Length: 262
Ligand SMILES: NC(=O)c1ccc[n+]([C@@H]2O[C@H](COP(=O)([O-])OP(=O)(O)OC[C@H]3O[C@@H](n4cnc5c(N)ncnc54)[C@H](OP(=O)(O)O)[C@@H]3O)[C@@H](O)[C@H]2O)c1
Image 1: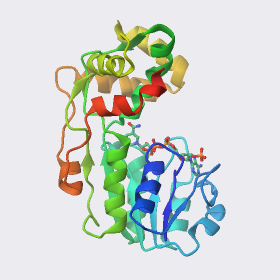
Image 2: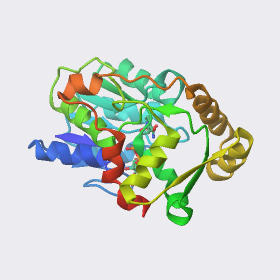
Image 3: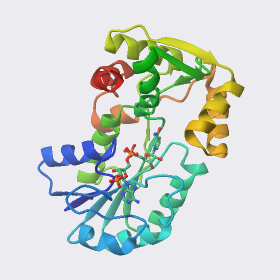
Image 4: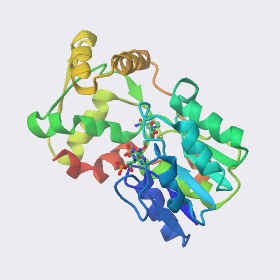
């Protein structure tokens, strides 16, 4: 039995479908949904979800969610293997804390390390829908955003076989696209002209602080985007190597999500 946590989220929902299509025994979980709801911040609640489970797809919900060691401890004392949805920047954040906790437990493990998700651009959907514009900073910052279904396809491979055990694949989209190009492709997918309106870093800081609240997170995002102007993010072939076909282009992601912007 494979337990998929974060099963109502961007990646987990596709992992659950992929496993079921492959004929695996799957149990899904999140706080409010899935076959057996459980809260990762309340390790006691994980018991029923872990009953008879051999392998876990683990999603840690975010930086502000406490209790990593306790939850990972409760999971790893019951299972043989964990496939963790980490991040390319694992060295710097809570993802590293989760990785260390899983590693110290000694279970078999795979740490999937994706770069930025294409789903992050859904944060623009309100502006696209209401005004046909995206007001954002660093239009020339280039990113290799990855389709959530590619992460899920790799996760399914990691969960069903052992050839990825002990590895940390760095998963990216197939190419870098500037943020302004991303907006143009979203417009193409929905059949509308969507304009990029460049915000200065100062204007953006104010807007993002109102939206996201967390000053450290906002400043880290701004300096990361600034560093991507003219440089772009790494593009790896780990998706191709693992699942035997290239990662889906951002244009395909836009087509799959056109309804989210209308
Ligand atoms: N966005 C990016 O660019 C990016 C890049 C690299 C890595 N990541 C990492 O990817 C992960 C997010 O993946 P995602 O986008 O697929 O998830 P998501 O869409 O944000 O969904 C989060 C999932 O976790 C569940 N959840 C939230 N709090 C929970 C709790 N306390 N206990 C149990 N379940 C809980 C949610 O369901 P309920 O609300 O029902 O509980 C939902 O199923 C994060 O760790 C993020 O840091 C993101």
